[in-house]
Amino acid sequence: MAPPQLRGSLFIDGKWSPTGSGRTIDVINPATEEAICQVDYCDRSDTQRAIDAAAGAAAAWRALTPYEREIPLRKVGRLIRQRVDEVATALTLEQGKPLAEARLEVLANATFFEWYAEEGTRVYGEIVPSHFSNKRLFHFHQPIGVCAMISPWNFPLFLQGRKIAPALAAGCTCICRPSTQTPLSLIKLFEIIEDAGIPAGVANLVIGPAGECMEAFYSDVRVRQISFSGSTEIGKEIMRRSAEHVKKIGIELGGHAPFLAFADYGAQAAAKLAALSKFRNCGQSCISASRFYVQEEIYDEFCAQAVAEAEAIVIGNGMDDGVTMGPVAEPNHLEKTLRLIEDARGKGAEILSGGGRPEGFDKGYFVQPTVMTNITNDMELMQEEPFCPIMPIIPFKTYDEAMALANDSEYALAGYIATRNITTALRASEEMDAGIISVGDFSPATVLSPFGGLKQSGIGREGGREGILEYLEAKYVSLVLDE
Image (cartoon, rainbow, N blue to C red; front, side):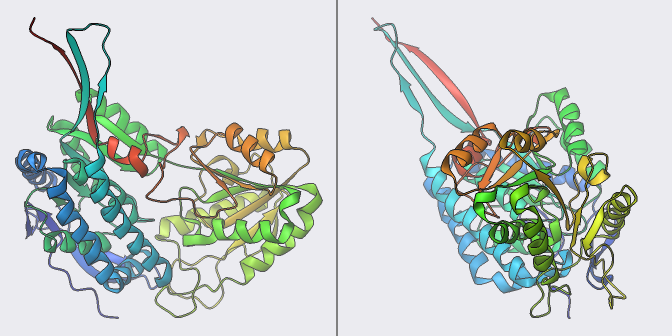
């Protein structure tokens, strides 16, 4: 298939410009291991140019009314919908997910711009009654300023759109740095941003080594906020380095989501729900369920149905019709997946389905959806975020046992509950350590509601009203009247 046509790689101050370094990097299709195209690979000086552009555009963009900012943001959403197939194709080629999943990600991206275009007009202040007759107390919100946005490769468009849209609606300017494995769909988004008439310098795109880009973000005091989605280890480093200039941070980090299947939900229904959560995007989702605790009464039937669900998955190139699971995104991740399987097997796990590379695939980073039992807590997949299509199933007897198992993790991003008992659902929602609780829903993320974790799964929220507040600062005024 022909590579996507790109206007450029770096979008700085309203222009597509080559990198000063002259470096390029190949973008690899994980389904074929072939280079799709080359993009410019910037250095720190290019990132600095982008910061300069964002800082230079900040005052004029901030000065616009939210209704004036609403117009181009709505146009971004409209153009995304018009070009959904073009953007989705680029996303599948670079990331590997089936084209149908890619289209959903692109359309979800459109909702961010449409919803936050309107939400920007609802950033209200408040008048507070004073204890004193001659005082008036009120507060309001103002944009924080220049923001840096760093996203991973698993949802390269969705995770950037969830940052860009509220930031721009709030009146901030930004510099976006995608994963170097998956820059193409974001380049396509920036083509749309250009066509929608977002002013020069308001939104900028750099593609380069994380170290060089981040050093520019850390050291420049004009960068007032850093928004990051990725690993807990990198999130901790961002916290340390941002402290020097007391930058505001929003970090959505790793997850190790428990899935609690209670007997009243039914074995077949629970297994179908579990498979949808686990194997979507080849298990490469921070909120993907990764520890499956099943009540003893339905355990055997759940396992059998989980195997049937896994074996019904059609593995292949995401561009091919009928494919329901593509490859993992990169060779290192394939190696990690196979290592986790072998570690579990070596420690006594029973592989019910999958367990390795699928037959007939000479190229591509493909791995079978894997279902296993006889799980012990010393297995690596129970201690680290797996981020792959492995479903470990563990039986439990009582509610209290299930909740203790669910909360036995340093991660607390998402949790899944399969029950038809409203008391169990509400109690578990309150007691489970997770920022996102899903009851009977395999895909809880939405623009309407706050998304983020507890414990070592992050700080801050994206989505909902909370998402735009991340890019605003509250200013309080105490005014004494003349006597």
